[in-house]
Length: 345
Image (cartoon, rainbow, N blue to C red; front, side):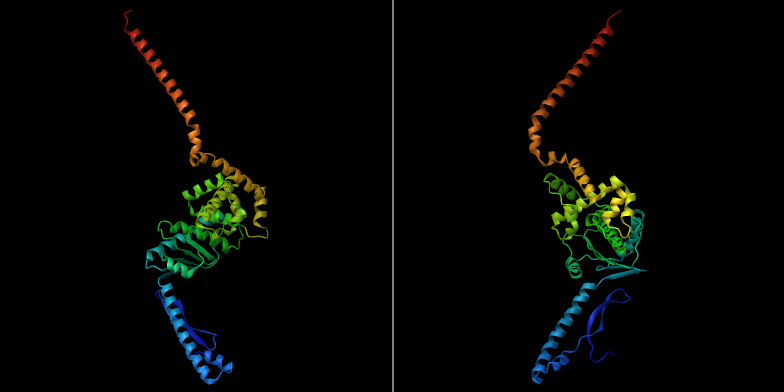
């Protein structure tokens, strides 16, 4: 029995058969009539206000209960410290995801030496309305989000993409559970590298940015989640490009060093491991971008092709004449040899 001065309101929990049920949990809310008595209101005013407050209380309580039951209906699978939840009735998704989580975490360990050190709950949400209830601040262009070291959401509507999204977000979880503070460009670059995702639209966005000299500084990518879809696409492309460039220069063996939790900053760890500053690294990466996208000007600016067209036609004409003359000369030699072979000795 609850104490007299406790007020109960329904809250949502999971029951043993993996569905949601409503239960009443105590909280320290003081009943409205006691609050009004403490204010010394006249009796008739107190009664009117009490009735009004109870009507509002019942309405909001019912609405709260209904909203919670609608939000959390689905299935749940628990394996040790791993909990998987989905708003659909697809049990195969949860079983497949459970197997994949173990495999992905092992792959990440081989690459980075990061281990999962705490419990983890993963939500697979198919309904965008559900996503908005759970994480109202989620970017509309994303397919998943890690909200804390123990919780991540996968809401990519494409069934082919959810596994790559899971790999991406699990990387963020392991970074968070190991108490690492990383630059966003490195964190996102690592997650995309682990996910194995390559975006043609991101490649084009990076090419356009190089041509316009509009590449975002790596330090400014800390706010990538607040960017528009188009700018975020460029930010993620830059993160992956810079991360791959680092691996080309330093090799994958640098990752466990950079992903070590110690008293040094990421900048200090990188400089000690690579013998160059992050500023020098970014300058080198930008120069590499300019070289890599040099050909892109021909595709993006067809006027250059029109200017070069007369020279291309002339070169083609002379090459054709040279090839034709070579063939004629070869035919003449073959014909002369045939005539010579047919003459009597």
